[in-house]
Image (cartoon, rainbow, N blue to C red; front, side, top):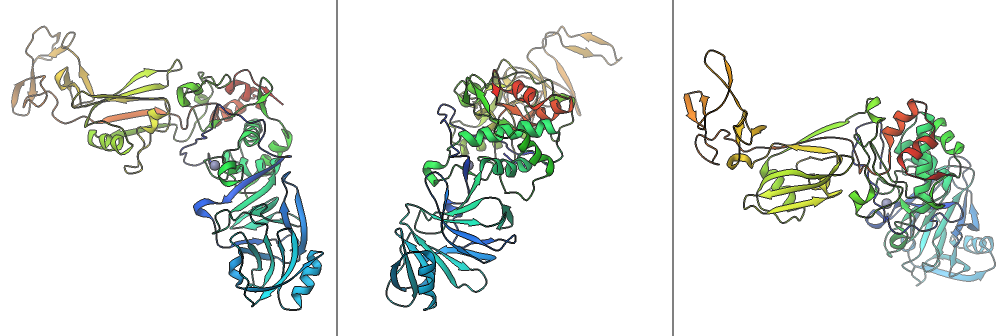
Length: 511
Ligand SMILES: [Zn+2]
Protein backbone atom coordinates (compact mmCIF):
# COMPACT_ATOMS: atom_id res chain seq x y z
CA UNK A 1 0.00 0.00 0.00
CA UNK A 2 1.35 3.49 -0.23
CA UNK A 3 1.05 7.20 -0.11
CA UNK A 4 -2.42 8.23 -1.12
CA UNK A 5 -2.44 11.95 -1.55
CA UNK A 6 -0.56 12.00 -4.83
CA UNK A 7 -0.81 9.79 -7.88
CA UNK A 8 -2.27 6.50 -6.90
CA UNK A 9 -0.79 3.25 -7.98
CA UNK A 10 -1.48 -0.28 -6.93
CA UNK A 11 -2.70 -0.74 -3.42
CA UNK A 12 -2.54 -4.38 -2.68
CA UNK A 13 -2.28 -6.52 0.35
CA UNK A 14 -2.03 -10.16 -0.48
CA UNK A 15 -2.98 -12.18 2.52
CA UNK A 16 -3.41 -15.84 3.09
CA UNK A 17 -7.09 -15.51 3.79
CA UNK A 18 -7.62 -18.94 5.23
CA UNK A 19 -4.96 -19.06 7.89
CA UNK A 20 -5.28 -16.37 10.50
CA UNK A 21 -2.86 -16.81 13.38
CA UNK A 22 -4.05 -15.64 16.76
CA UNK A 23 -1.37 -12.98 16.92
CA UNK A 24 1.84 -12.03 15.20
CA UNK A 25 3.03 -9.19 17.37
CA UNK A 26 4.77 -10.75 20.38
CA UNK A 27 4.21 -8.90 23.65
CA UNK A 28 3.15 -5.83 21.72
CA UNK A 29 6.39 -5.75 19.72
CA UNK A 30 6.65 -6.15 15.94
CA UNK A 31 9.67 -6.82 13.76
CA UNK A 32 9.78 -4.91 10.50
CA UNK A 33 12.29 -5.79 7.80
CA UNK A 34 14.05 -2.71 6.38
CA UNK A 35 16.82 -4.53 4.48
CA UNK A 36 16.70 -8.26 3.73
CA UNK A 37 17.09 -10.88 1.05
CA UNK A 38 18.63 -9.31 -2.02
CA UNK A 39 18.66 -5.92 -0.29
CA UNK A 40 20.85 -7.20 2.56
CA UNK A 41 23.66 -4.74 3.27
CA UNK A 42 27.38 -5.05 3.95
CA UNK A 43 27.30 -2.06 6.28
CA UNK A 44 24.43 -0.52 8.23
CA UNK A 45 24.81 2.84 9.92
CA UNK A 46 22.98 4.18 12.92
CA UNK A 47 23.14 7.74 14.11
CA UNK A 48 21.76 8.68 17.50
CA UNK A 49 21.62 12.44 17.72
CA UNK A 50 19.43 12.36 20.82
CA UNK A 51 21.88 11.11 23.43
CA UNK A 52 24.73 9.47 21.56
CA UNK A 53 24.38 6.14 23.27
CA UNK A 54 23.55 2.55 22.49
CA UNK A 55 22.85 -0.59 24.42
CA UNK A 56 24.28 -3.69 22.77
CA UNK A 57 22.82 -7.15 23.13
CA UNK A 58 20.03 -9.18 21.56
CA UNK A 59 16.27 -9.64 21.54
CA UNK A 60 15.15 -12.79 23.33
CA UNK A 61 12.28 -15.04 22.26
CA UNK A 62 9.79 -12.77 24.02
CA UNK A 63 11.25 -9.81 22.09
CA UNK A 64 12.65 -8.26 25.25
CA UNK A 65 16.04 -6.62 24.81
CA UNK A 66 18.85 -8.31 26.74
CA UNK A 67 21.61 -5.79 27.38
CA UNK A 68 25.19 -7.08 27.30
CA UNK A 69 27.01 -3.75 27.31
CA UNK A 70 26.74 -0.10 26.38
CA UNK A 71 28.52 2.37 24.12
CA UNK A 72 28.72 6.11 24.22
CA UNK A 73 28.95 6.90 20.52
CA UNK A 74 26.82 8.96 18.15
CA UNK A 75 27.40 7.05 14.90
CA UNK A 76 28.07 3.33 14.67
CA UNK A 77 28.21 0.95 11.74
CA UNK A 78 27.36 -2.75 11.72
CA UNK A 79 29.38 -4.95 9.35
CA UNK A 80 29.98 -8.68 8.83
CA UNK A 81 32.58 -9.81 11.41
CA UNK A 82 35.04 -10.83 8.72
CA UNK A 83 35.60 -7.15 7.97
CA UNK A 84 37.74 -7.00 11.11
CA UNK A 85 40.34 -9.47 9.76
CA UNK A 86 42.05 -12.29 11.64
CA UNK A 87 42.36 -11.95 15.38
CA UNK A 88 43.85 -13.05 18.69
CA UNK A 89 41.55 -13.92 21.57
CA UNK A 90 41.64 -14.17 25.36
CA UNK A 91 38.94 -15.06 27.86
CA UNK A 92 36.26 -15.89 28.66
CA UNK A 93 35.55 -12.96 30.97
CA UNK A 94 32.75 -12.35 33.42
CA UNK A 95 31.28 -9.28 31.77
CA UNK A 96 31.28 -6.95 28.78
CA UNK A 97 33.30 -4.38 30.75
CA UNK A 98 35.97 -6.92 31.81
CA UNK A 99 36.32 -8.12 28.22
CA UNK A 100 36.45 -4.53 26.99
CA UNK A 101 39.14 -3.71 29.50
CA UNK A 102 41.28 -6.69 28.51
CA UNK A 103 40.80 -5.95 24.80
CA UNK A 104 41.61 -2.29 25.31
CA UNK A 105 45.13 -3.17 26.46
CA UNK A 106 45.77 -4.58 22.97
CA UNK A 107 43.76 -2.05 21.01
CA UNK A 108 41.04 -4.65 20.49
CA UNK A 109 37.33 -5.06 21.11
CA UNK A 110 35.01 -7.04 23.39
CA UNK A 111 33.18 -9.95 21.81
CA UNK A 112 30.15 -11.99 22.85
CA UNK A 113 30.55 -15.43 21.30
CA UNK A 114 28.40 -18.47 22.03
CA UNK A 115 27.09 -16.88 25.22
CA UNK A 116 30.46 -15.79 26.70
CA UNK A 117 32.58 -12.64 26.69
CA UNK A 118 36.06 -12.57 25.11
CA UNK A 119 38.67 -10.00 24.26
CA UNK A 120 39.77 -9.97 20.63
CA UNK A 121 42.47 -7.97 18.84
CA UNK A 122 43.94 -7.91 15.38
CA UNK A 123 46.58 -10.38 14.34
CA UNK A 124 46.85 -14.06 15.15
CA UNK A 125 45.29 -16.83 13.15
CA UNK A 126 41.67 -16.88 14.14
CA UNK A 127 38.98 -16.03 11.62
CA UNK A 128 35.41 -14.94 12.12
CA UNK A 129 32.50 -17.27 11.45
CA UNK A 130 29.82 -16.64 8.86
CA UNK A 131 27.36 -15.60 11.60
CA UNK A 132 29.57 -12.95 13.21
CA UNK A 133 28.47 -9.31 13.14
CA UNK A 134 30.72 -6.48 14.29
CA UNK A 135 30.06 -2.92 15.43
CA UNK A 136 32.43 -0.17 14.32
CA UNK A 137 32.83 3.48 15.09
CA UNK A 138 31.52 5.11 11.91
CA UNK A 139 34.15 7.86 11.97
CA UNK A 140 37.33 5.96 12.85
CA UNK A 141 36.27 2.43 11.76
CA UNK A 142 37.61 1.19 15.11
CA UNK A 143 36.04 -2.11 16.19
CA UNK A 144 33.74 -1.60 19.19
CA UNK A 145 32.02 -4.96 19.63
CA UNK A 146 31.47 -8.32 18.01
CA UNK A 147 28.46 -10.58 18.39
CA UNK A 148 28.29 -14.21 17.32
CA UNK A 149 25.64 -16.57 18.67
CA UNK A 150 25.82 -18.85 15.64
CA UNK A 151 22.49 -17.59 14.39
CA UNK A 152 20.56 -18.56 17.53
CA UNK A 153 20.24 -14.88 18.31
CA UNK A 154 21.13 -11.84 16.27
CA UNK A 155 22.98 -8.72 17.31
CA UNK A 156 20.55 -6.22 18.80
CA UNK A 157 21.20 -2.49 19.16
CA UNK A 158 18.94 -0.36 21.28
CA UNK A 159 19.50 3.38 20.95
CA UNK A 160 19.33 5.27 24.22
CA UNK A 161 17.11 8.28 24.48
CA UNK A 162 14.91 8.25 21.43
CA UNK A 163 14.51 7.81 17.70
CA UNK A 164 17.61 7.00 15.65
CA UNK A 165 18.56 7.63 12.04
CA UNK A 166 19.05 4.82 9.55
CA UNK A 167 19.49 5.56 5.84
CA UNK A 168 17.68 8.87 5.93
CA UNK A 169 14.76 7.80 8.10
CA UNK A 170 14.29 8.07 11.82
CA UNK A 171 13.03 5.08 13.77
CA UNK A 172 11.65 4.45 17.23
CA UNK A 173 12.60 1.23 19.00
CA UNK A 174 15.71 -0.84 18.38
CA UNK A 175 17.36 -2.84 15.64
CA UNK A 176 18.33 -6.40 14.97
CA UNK A 177 20.95 -7.51 12.45
CA UNK A 178 20.42 -11.12 11.39
CA UNK A 179 23.04 -12.59 9.13
CA UNK A 180 20.93 -15.37 7.75
CA UNK A 181 22.79 -16.14 4.59
CA UNK A 182 26.34 -15.79 5.86
CA UNK A 183 26.66 -12.83 3.54
CA UNK A 184 25.26 -9.37 4.17
CA UNK A 185 23.22 -8.16 7.10
CA UNK A 186 19.50 -7.87 7.35
CA UNK A 187 18.28 -4.75 9.12
CA UNK A 188 15.17 -5.24 11.22
CA UNK A 189 13.42 -2.53 13.24
CA UNK A 190 12.10 -3.99 16.49
CA UNK A 191 9.42 -1.59 17.63
CA UNK A 192 6.27 -1.42 19.71
CA UNK A 193 3.08 -2.03 17.75
CA UNK A 194 1.78 1.47 18.53
CA UNK A 195 4.99 3.19 17.39
CA UNK A 196 4.90 1.05 14.27
CA UNK A 197 1.35 2.21 13.46
CA UNK A 198 2.49 5.80 13.90
CA UNK A 199 5.09 5.14 11.21
CA UNK A 200 2.52 3.57 8.86
CA UNK A 201 -0.27 6.12 8.99
CA UNK A 202 1.58 9.00 7.29
CA UNK A 203 2.40 6.75 4.33
CA UNK A 204 -0.80 4.72 4.04
CA UNK A 205 -3.09 7.70 4.45
CA UNK A 206 -1.38 10.97 5.34
CA UNK A 207 -1.49 13.90 7.66
CA UNK A 208 -4.27 16.36 7.02
CA UNK A 209 -7.01 13.78 6.53
CA UNK A 210 -10.08 13.97 8.79
CA UNK A 211 -9.58 12.39 12.19
CA UNK A 212 -12.25 9.70 11.73
CA UNK A 213 -10.56 8.48 8.53
CA UNK A 214 -7.15 8.46 10.23
CA UNK A 215 -8.59 6.56 13.17
CA UNK A 216 -10.20 3.97 10.89
CA UNK A 217 -6.88 3.56 9.08
CA UNK A 218 -5.04 3.23 12.39
CA UNK A 219 -7.33 0.41 13.50
CA UNK A 220 -6.97 -1.34 10.13
CA UNK A 221 -3.18 -1.02 10.14
CA UNK A 222 -2.98 -2.23 13.74
CA UNK A 223 -5.22 -5.20 13.05
CA UNK A 224 -3.22 -6.15 9.99
CA UNK A 225 0.04 -5.91 11.92
CA UNK A 226 -1.44 -8.00 14.71
CA UNK A 227 -2.28 -10.94 12.49
CA UNK A 228 0.27 -11.05 9.73
CA UNK A 229 3.21 -13.40 9.88
CA UNK A 230 3.84 -13.03 6.20
CA UNK A 231 7.64 -12.99 6.28
CA UNK A 232 8.29 -14.81 9.55
CA UNK A 233 9.20 -18.21 8.19
CA UNK A 234 11.29 -16.87 5.32
CA UNK A 235 13.07 -13.90 6.87
CA UNK A 236 12.43 -14.04 10.61
CA UNK A 237 10.51 -10.76 10.82
CA UNK A 238 6.77 -10.12 10.70
CA UNK A 239 6.41 -7.55 7.95
CA UNK A 240 8.42 -5.73 5.35
CA UNK A 241 8.20 -1.95 5.03
CA UNK A 242 6.81 -1.70 1.49
CA UNK A 243 3.46 -1.81 -0.29
CA UNK A 244 3.79 -5.58 -0.13
CA UNK A 245 2.78 -5.34 3.54
CA UNK A 246 2.25 -1.77 4.76
CA UNK A 247 4.46 1.18 3.91
CA UNK A 248 6.47 2.14 6.98
CA UNK A 249 9.36 4.55 7.24
CA UNK A 250 9.66 5.30 10.93
CA UNK A 251 8.63 8.52 12.57
CA UNK A 252 9.86 11.12 10.05
CA UNK A 253 6.54 11.92 8.45
CA UNK A 254 4.34 11.53 11.50
CA UNK A 255 2.08 14.44 12.24
CA UNK A 256 0.34 15.42 15.43
CA UNK A 257 -2.94 14.32 13.82
CA UNK A 258 -1.72 10.88 12.69
CA UNK A 259 -0.13 10.28 16.09
CA UNK A 260 -3.33 11.43 17.79
CA UNK A 261 -5.40 8.99 15.69
CA UNK A 262 -3.16 6.14 16.83
CA UNK A 263 -3.32 7.22 20.47
CA UNK A 264 -7.09 7.73 20.38
CA UNK A 265 -7.62 4.15 19.18
CA UNK A 266 -4.76 2.59 21.17
CA UNK A 267 -4.98 -1.18 21.22
CA UNK A 268 -8.21 -1.33 19.19
CA UNK A 269 -8.57 -3.90 16.45
CA UNK A 270 -11.29 -5.15 14.13
CA UNK A 271 -12.71 -8.50 15.21
CA UNK A 272 -15.16 -10.94 13.71
CA UNK A 273 -16.79 -13.33 16.18
CA UNK A 274 -14.08 -12.39 18.64
CA UNK A 275 -11.14 -13.19 16.35
CA UNK A 276 -8.88 -10.61 14.76
CA UNK A 277 -10.05 -9.86 11.24
CA UNK A 278 -7.95 -9.49 8.11
CA UNK A 279 -8.52 -5.82 7.51
CA UNK A 280 -7.56 -5.56 3.90
CA UNK A 281 -8.04 -2.13 2.40
CA UNK A 282 -7.54 -0.34 -0.87
CA UNK A 283 -7.33 3.17 -2.22
CA UNK A 284 -10.82 3.51 -3.72
CA UNK A 285 -13.44 1.08 -4.95
CA UNK A 286 -14.84 3.08 -7.84
CA UNK A 287 -18.43 2.61 -6.71
CA UNK A 288 -18.65 -0.78 -5.02
CA UNK A 289 -16.43 -2.99 -2.94
CA UNK A 290 -16.11 -6.68 -3.69
CA UNK A 291 -16.43 -9.95 -1.83
CA UNK A 292 -13.17 -11.69 -1.07
CA UNK A 293 -14.28 -14.86 -2.82
CA UNK A 294 -14.67 -13.01 -6.12
CA UNK A 295 -11.14 -11.66 -5.85
CA UNK A 296 -9.03 -14.24 -4.07
CA UNK A 297 -11.25 -17.30 -4.37
CA UNK A 298 -12.08 -17.91 -0.72
CA UNK A 299 -15.13 -16.50 1.01
CA UNK A 300 -14.55 -14.42 4.14
CA UNK A 301 -17.68 -13.66 6.15
CA UNK A 302 -16.81 -10.04 6.92
CA UNK A 303 -15.37 -9.17 3.48
CA UNK A 304 -18.61 -8.77 1.54
CA UNK A 305 -18.96 -6.53 -1.49
CA UNK A 306 -21.43 -3.68 -1.33
CA UNK A 307 -22.37 -0.54 -3.21
CA UNK A 308 -20.43 2.47 -1.94
CA UNK A 309 -22.53 5.64 -1.95
CA UNK A 310 -19.80 7.73 -0.31
CA UNK A 311 -16.92 7.94 -2.78
CA UNK A 312 -19.04 9.78 -5.32
CA UNK A 313 -19.62 12.63 -2.84
CA UNK A 314 -16.01 13.80 -3.00
CA UNK A 315 -13.43 14.48 -5.68
CA UNK A 316 -10.88 11.67 -5.80
CA UNK A 317 -7.65 12.14 -7.76
CA UNK A 318 -7.35 9.85 -10.78
CA UNK A 319 -10.68 8.27 -9.94
CA UNK A 320 -11.33 7.15 -13.51
CA UNK A 321 -8.93 5.59 -15.94
CA UNK A 322 -8.86 4.67 -19.60
CA UNK A 323 -6.47 2.13 -21.03
CA UNK A 324 -6.33 1.37 -24.74
CA UNK A 325 -4.75 -1.75 -26.15
CA UNK A 326 -4.33 -2.70 -29.78
CA UNK A 327 -5.02 -6.37 -30.49
CA UNK A 328 -1.31 -7.06 -30.99
CA UNK A 329 -0.39 -5.35 -27.71
CA UNK A 330 -3.05 -7.24 -25.80
CA UNK A 331 -1.97 -10.51 -27.39
CA UNK A 332 1.62 -9.85 -26.32
CA UNK A 333 0.61 -8.95 -22.78
CA UNK A 334 -1.49 -12.08 -22.34
CA UNK A 335 1.10 -14.39 -23.85
CA UNK A 336 3.88 -12.76 -21.85
CA UNK A 337 1.83 -13.32 -18.69
CA UNK A 338 1.70 -17.02 -19.45
CA UNK A 339 -1.77 -17.27 -20.94
CA UNK A 340 -2.24 -19.67 -23.82
CA UNK A 341 -3.97 -17.70 -26.53
CA UNK A 342 -3.34 -16.64 -30.14
CA UNK A 343 -3.91 -13.23 -31.68
CA UNK A 344 -6.71 -11.64 -29.72
CA UNK A 345 -9.77 -10.90 -31.80
CA UNK A 346 -12.21 -10.06 -29.07
CA UNK A 347 -12.23 -9.24 -25.38
CA UNK A 348 -15.32 -8.66 -23.33
CA UNK A 349 -16.68 -8.73 -19.80
CA UNK A 350 -18.44 -12.08 -19.64
CA UNK A 351 -19.69 -11.91 -16.07
CA UNK A 352 -20.19 -9.28 -13.42
CA UNK A 353 -20.54 -9.71 -9.68
CA UNK A 354 -23.77 -8.71 -7.88
CA UNK A 355 -22.23 -5.30 -7.15
CA UNK A 356 -21.35 -4.77 -10.80
CA UNK A 357 -17.64 -5.38 -10.63
CA UNK A 358 -15.95 -7.52 -13.25
CA UNK A 359 -16.04 -11.18 -12.34
CA UNK A 360 -14.85 -12.68 -15.62
CA UNK A 361 -13.25 -11.43 -18.81
CA UNK A 362 -13.26 -13.58 -21.92
CA UNK A 363 -10.66 -13.27 -24.66
CA UNK A 364 -11.17 -14.89 -28.07
CA UNK A 365 -8.38 -15.37 -30.57
CA UNK A 366 -8.56 -15.46 -34.35
CA UNK A 367 -8.89 -19.24 -34.36
CA UNK A 368 -11.95 -19.02 -32.16
CA UNK A 369 -10.18 -20.27 -29.07
CA UNK A 370 -11.41 -18.54 -25.94
CA UNK A 371 -9.79 -17.81 -22.60
CA UNK A 372 -11.70 -16.69 -19.52
CA UNK A 373 -9.92 -15.12 -16.56
CA UNK A 374 -11.59 -14.62 -13.20
CA UNK A 375 -11.47 -12.53 -10.08
CA UNK A 376 -8.50 -10.32 -9.38
CA UNK A 377 -6.78 -11.70 -12.46
CA UNK A 378 -9.31 -9.75 -14.50
CA UNK A 379 -7.41 -6.53 -13.96
CA UNK A 380 -4.01 -8.19 -13.73
CA UNK A 381 -4.58 -9.71 -17.18
CA UNK A 382 -4.29 -6.20 -18.60
CA UNK A 383 -1.27 -5.17 -16.56
CA UNK A 384 1.84 -4.35 -18.54
CA UNK A 385 4.96 -2.53 -17.47
CA UNK A 386 6.20 -2.88 -21.05
CA UNK A 387 3.36 -0.73 -22.36
CA UNK A 388 2.97 1.23 -19.14
CA UNK A 389 -0.67 0.22 -19.01
CA UNK A 390 -2.58 -0.69 -15.91
CA UNK A 391 -6.22 -1.52 -15.29
CA UNK A 392 -6.37 -0.24 -11.74
CA UNK A 393 -9.53 -1.84 -10.41
CA UNK A 394 -12.00 -4.60 -11.17
CA UNK A 395 -14.69 -2.07 -11.96
CA UNK A 396 -14.40 -1.42 -15.68
CA UNK A 397 -15.91 -1.99 -19.09
CA UNK A 398 -14.33 -2.92 -22.39
CA UNK A 399 -15.42 -1.09 -25.51
CA UNK A 400 -14.49 -1.83 -29.07
CA UNK A 401 -13.13 -5.06 -30.39
CA UNK A 402 -11.68 -6.65 -33.46
CA UNK A 403 -14.26 -9.32 -33.94
CA UNK A 404 -17.42 -7.97 -35.40
CA UNK A 405 -16.60 -7.97 -39.09
CA UNK A 406 -18.36 -11.23 -39.70
CA UNK A 407 -21.35 -10.55 -37.54
CA UNK A 408 -22.22 -6.89 -37.69
CA UNK A 409 -22.04 -3.53 -39.42
CA UNK A 410 -19.50 -1.06 -38.17
CA UNK A 411 -20.26 2.60 -38.31
CA UNK A 412 -17.73 5.37 -37.88
CA UNK A 413 -14.89 3.03 -37.10
CA UNK A 414 -14.86 0.20 -34.68
CA UNK A 415 -16.23 2.00 -31.67
CA UNK A 416 -19.89 1.38 -32.43
CA UNK A 417 -21.54 -1.43 -34.27
CA UNK A 418 -24.93 -2.72 -35.34
CA UNK A 419 -25.54 -6.42 -35.06
CA UNK A 420 -28.13 -6.12 -37.82
CA UNK A 421 -29.74 -3.43 -39.94
CA UNK A 422 -33.08 -3.94 -38.28
CA UNK A 423 -34.08 -0.60 -36.82
CA UNK A 424 -31.38 1.35 -38.67
CA UNK A 425 -32.13 4.73 -40.22
CA UNK A 426 -31.15 6.29 -43.52
CA UNK A 427 -30.61 9.89 -44.47
CA UNK A 428 -31.75 10.92 -47.97
CA UNK A 429 -30.10 13.62 -50.07
CA UNK A 430 -32.90 15.93 -49.01
CA UNK A 431 -32.02 15.36 -45.39
CA UNK A 432 -35.10 13.23 -44.74
CA UNK A 433 -34.59 10.51 -42.15
CA UNK A 434 -36.49 7.25 -42.64
CA UNK A 435 -36.30 3.72 -41.30
CA UNK A 436 -34.14 1.50 -43.45
CA UNK A 437 -36.09 -1.34 -45.06
CA UNK A 438 -33.73 -2.71 -47.70
CA UNK A 439 -31.20 -5.52 -47.53
CA UNK A 440 -28.19 -4.23 -49.45
CA UNK A 441 -27.09 -0.93 -47.97
CA UNK A 442 -24.52 1.40 -49.47
CA UNK A 443 -22.24 3.74 -47.67
CA UNK A 444 -21.06 7.11 -48.89
CA UNK A 445 -17.33 7.16 -49.42
CA UNK A 446 -14.92 9.78 -50.67
CA UNK A 447 -15.18 8.32 -54.16
CA UNK A 448 -18.91 7.87 -54.34
CA UNK A 449 -20.83 4.97 -52.89
CA UNK A 450 -19.92 1.39 -52.11
CA UNK A 451 -21.96 -1.60 -51.08
CA UNK A 452 -21.44 -2.54 -47.46
CA UNK A 453 -20.10 -5.96 -46.90
CA UNK A 454 -20.05 -7.71 -43.60
CA UNK A 455 -17.29 -10.12 -44.50
CA UNK A 456 -14.00 -9.46 -42.72
CA UNK A 457 -11.32 -8.27 -45.08
CA UNK A 458 -13.67 -7.34 -47.93
CA UNK A 459 -12.56 -4.17 -49.70
CA UNK A 460 -15.88 -2.52 -49.05
CA UNK A 461 -16.20 -3.64 -45.44
CA UNK A 462 -17.86 -1.02 -43.32
CA UNK A 463 -14.91 -0.83 -40.98
CA UNK A 464 -11.44 -1.14 -42.33
CA UNK A 465 -9.06 -0.76 -39.42
CA UNK A 466 -8.61 -3.26 -36.61
CA UNK A 467 -10.35 -2.17 -33.48
CA UNK A 468 -8.64 -1.31 -30.26
CA UNK A 469 -9.76 -2.40 -26.87
CA UNK A 470 -10.65 0.60 -24.77
CA UNK A 471 -10.93 -0.22 -21.08
CA UNK A 472 -12.53 2.43 -18.94
CA UNK A 473 -13.09 2.12 -15.24
CA UNK A 474 -13.10 3.68 -11.82
CA UNK A 475 -11.31 2.90 -8.58
CA UNK A 476 -7.84 1.82 -7.58
CA UNK A 477 -6.88 -1.38 -5.82
CA UNK A 478 -8.30 -4.81 -5.13
CA UNK A 479 -11.75 -3.54 -4.08
CA UNK A 480 -11.90 -5.70 -0.94
CA UNK A 481 -12.54 -4.27 2.53
CA UNK A 482 -12.18 -0.59 3.35
CA UNK A 483 -11.90 2.06 0.68
CA UNK A 484 -9.52 4.70 2.01
CA UNK A 485 -11.11 7.48 -0.04
CA UNK A 486 -14.50 6.14 0.97
CA UNK A 487 -13.36 6.53 4.57
CA UNK A 488 -12.38 10.10 3.75
CA UNK A 489 -15.82 10.76 2.25
CA UNK A 490 -17.61 9.26 5.25
CA UNK A 491 -15.46 11.25 7.67
CA UNK A 492 -16.37 14.44 5.81
CA UNK A 493 -20.03 13.61 6.32
CA UNK A 494 -19.48 13.31 10.05
CA UNK A 495 -19.30 9.56 10.42
CA UNK A 496 -17.03 8.14 13.13
CA UNK A 497 -14.21 5.67 12.58
CA UNK A 498 -16.47 2.96 14.00
CA UNK A 499 -19.15 3.84 11.44
CA UNK A 500 -16.53 3.63 8.69
CA UNK A 501 -15.21 0.25 9.82
CA UNK A 502 -18.72 -1.14 10.27
CA UNK A 503 -19.65 -0.05 6.77
CA UNK A 504 -16.69 -1.59 4.99
CA UNK A 505 -16.40 -4.73 7.13
CA UNK A 506 -19.57 -6.75 7.67
CA UNK A 507 -20.75 -7.79 11.15
CA UNK A 508 -17.51 -6.88 12.90
CA UNK A 509 -16.77 -5.36 16.25
CA UNK A 510 -14.11 -2.83 17.12
CA UNK A 511 -12.23 -3.15 20.36
ZN1 LIG B 1 5.87 -7.70 2.91
